Image (cartoon, rainbow, N blue to C red; front, side, top):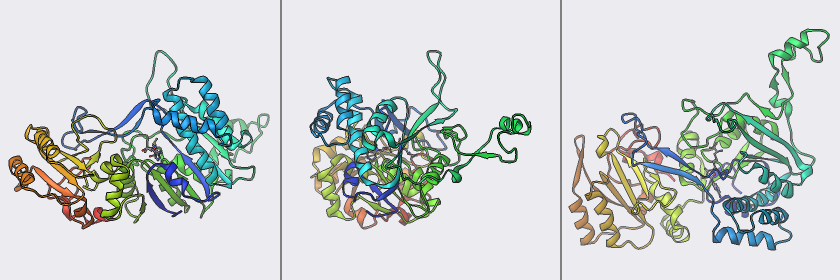
Length: 473
Ligand SMILES: C[S@@+](CC[C@H](N)C(=O)[O-])C[C@H]1O[C@@H](n2cnc3c(N)ncnc32)[C@H](O)[C@@H]1O
């Protein structure tokens, strides 16, 4: 278990390899079964980020279906009498006898929560961040896995953002379920004292009402948190990752439930809020995320001043070839983000095999879209021709076709020649670019115009090839 490392992959697979009783604090903010796809939008400062732009991407998806994998998961837990979540899943199966998206989600979470219990030290705590969509069911799983007696709090995080409704009360809170592994757990309320309300301080000045010292402006922390706001679109700390949580929220949890030098794990780390909180408070940390995009945001933006260790991503061509065989879809996402400026599709969207998109910085709107297609196996000329067809048909200004190794035949050269060139400023670029993962490992980037950052729209300063820090994996 390498500390201060960012792992790319499914947290269940990653956690499986680690020793029992090794982590002091776990915070998890998993998908909530919100039935949403969390989109981020490309936007350049010049075009203002038009929502209808073709270049929308899904950062991650939170829609659960009852499928073969879900059925297998439920059967497995159902037939394993010693599985910590056995009784909970059996009960949910009674509620959803024919399966459902909710049962699929709950069995997915049960597998991972059980793994987290194994990893937690006896003095450790876990905070499960969720919302009312599934918090009632998740609490049952947590009760089973951690023991009802180790339930410490349901923290209500109240925020002002979100909409209003005439059909029900506006939804303004998340729930954070706090459990310890045993009775002897780290808890430092003195580190997270809260401000007393003006009214109680006023009352304290009245000798009849005084139960507290009026000069004591702080109080022990309570389980309703109203003083930390959700990030608004203008918030300075915002990295644009959907569902990003405020740093203050994570700092409170880390300060209360760990000490300096402890190890903090976030198995669904997103854009790394927990990592930053732990690092700034002198804790060790480990972050895991299944999205290549999230990993890039943490590494290239949130923790850009640190040389962060990465695990689970290939380090050479052989590793990349294995990765492509083992997990083609994840490989595509990883491969496409080797070119700074490209953002991957995270769900297959039936859009003719486009695996990633980027925008040319400063180009006219109709000419700014670049697309990429990744071939992890042996490429064939038909797929290249279909890709070329999209470029020739005006779907994109430039297309990058990514293969593992060099692929150079007369048919490939013919496609490149037919695709023609594009002028950006004084320079001329090929509209169909062949790029290899082999080149990536040699530190070579495709010859392309400067691309816009996928979310801020800022340029990667120079033309992409002079960005060595972005090349080192
Ligand atoms: C709600 S977001 C977390 C946001 C995070 N707290 C932050 O402040 O940025 C949930 C994250 O879980 C990730 N995820 C979903 N399933 C996962 C899995 N099995 N293993 C690891 N990460 C997963 C998603 O990619 C997404 O980034």
